[in-house]
Image 1 (cartoon, one colour):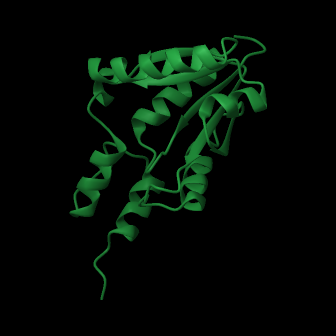
Image 2 (cartoon, one colour):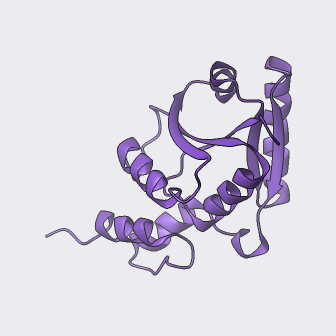
Length: 163
């Protein structure tokens, strides 16, 4: 949608092919897309913010209308601050929908000018999550079907046996 700035937010710990599928599709729907990495002091991500930022910038470099930023606090406040009109959310299963709809309603209550758009994941990515990818990689499994090469390399380094 011409003139629309959309935000696709998450922890991206790590970025997966499912995430990239949503980025690609959103980049075709909206003039600009911001991939917003949430900063949550209470969470202990496998990858630091700088690592996630670098990986996301590397794997989304082919999308000229996509940029990667960080946000802290409520996503809806971040959207208001940067002038975003749309929040893009991916849905893998019915359980995702219930949770995401509740958040979309709260966001609409706080900022009715920002809409939430749900994109269902492609069938082949419906079961892929960042936590699944981390779990497989932490045990030395092959995650090349679930994450781009730079992420696979970073995961292998992160979980390489010490000593």
